[in-house]
Amino acid sequence: MIKMNIKFIPRLLPLAMIVVMLSIATQSNGQARYFDERYITTQGHLNPVLVNPGAIGQADYHRLLFNYRNKWASFPGAPKSFSARYDGPIGNRLGLGVMVLSDNNGALQTLKGQLGLSYSLHTDINKMGIGISTEFINHGVDAGILNEETVDGTDVLLLSRLDGENFFDVSAGIQGVYADKFIYGLTFPGLVSSMLDAGNGDAAESTFGYMLQLGYRFDSREYDIVAEPSIVVKNLRYVPIHVDINVLAKFLDEKLTGGVTYTVGADERLGFLIGARVNAFNFFYSYNISRHEFQSYNNGSHELSVRFDVGRKDMPVVKNPMIEK
Image (cartoon, rainbow, N blue to C red):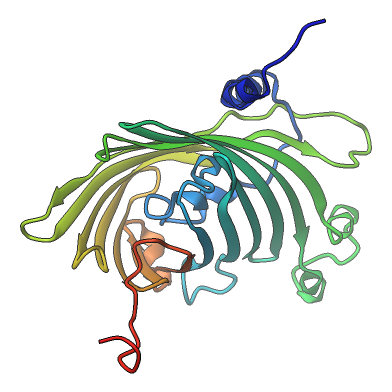
């Protein structure tokens, strides 16, 4: 009778997750989706958990993150999205993440729920997380569109979309830091994108996409400044490839943050970011303007993130002057 060492099982978990990721990537076929939601955010380099399941639970505390983005502000029917996320450690090297997202783009409406799991591989020089997430997505049409004069309210295809179409996704990613300097991340969104309850059971060919993040951390203790230049390459489903060139600067023990992003490729835009941290409260705001002609018809894009770090160990201890001196 063969005996198995239980302590050896956790060592096999990251290898098993990598095998699953690769097998899914080579076999993935599914019904085509409208778009990839990971194109919505422009703050993925600042909060990688927004786009990469490998970043789930990589902090030694729990995080609540709320994100809102208004793209092409002031333009009628402009895309607006809101997401709420939790992630944190749940056991020995394991992390758990939960997310809900709502997006409105004209008459198109998207609701999404995500459940993610990660495994941490930490050594003296490298800290890496391997994550996988399952996602349920509903793409639908706002019933109010039937009241529009230019819309045929008897269109069979339109009426069939009022209740929406449901999809099931599997995504995977790796996020890490080497020598506390080199930042890297690789995301494979929508490795499986299958339509649920498809009438004919047919599956359209799925497009393989990825997001690659590379960065470096310059830490100047003498001037109390941390600089993080990085690039993020996005090759996503139904989104032309483009590259974000980012520069972040953090001051006063990383309590203040400023940044600039320039995007090249199909989407050319310039973005600015400011942020602040007060104890467990983190606030980030970014504004983007495009070089395309359409910019003259809107007021740019706004994105706001609010994060609460629960149980963060480096938080200052506030003493009660009536008790301690």
